Amino acid sequence: MFTGIIEGVGTVKSISKVKSKNKVPGADIQLSIYLGGLKKGLKIGNSVSIDGVCLTITRLHKGSADFQLVDETVKRSCLGLIKPGDKVNIERSLRLGDRLEGHIVLGHVDTTGIIEQIINSPGETKMWIKINDQEIFHSIVPKGPLAVDGISLTVVDAKDQKISVALIPHTLSNTTLGLKSRGDRVNIEIDVIGRYVTYQKHSLNSNFSKLYNEFMQGK
Image (tube, rainbow, N blue to C red; front, side, top):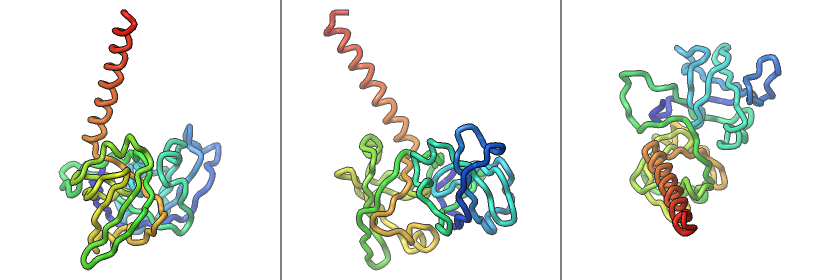
């Protein structure tokens, strides 16, 4: 579990195919990231949020950590698009007793979005993001929490399958969002409460449709 409060920015050192002898079932890609001081206290098997994706450390060396990506992670998130030298947001998992400064973030990316517009104004930057999955978009509400590349943000607008978020200078300076441009993709994780409400809604609609069809067929 995470909070969406980014602790620092890491650098992608390498991306390679996982060797068969070290391969986790379903994992094809090995990602090595330089964590710097954030490596302190971490152990193999610990969870770390990389651009909002919960990954497990498989190897530690000097100031870096290795992670293995399964196919679902590559398909669902933007991690399959990163390359050596890219910057990524880093957050270590929440410890019992820590303050929950942002909101509850699971590190389970729901979909990706495309940055369509960045509007700069004194003291604030407004970023518009198009949500690729329509069902996920309907789970996002104005003034509700949202994780964008692992960053806990508050939704300002939600319309026409697009959402906007307001970014303060601190967020732009201390996360990768300050490096983003129009057309870039970002990872999106909806609020955990919204996730379950949406699931229940679909389940109820599905059961109602089934009952209605059985009624119309005289069963």
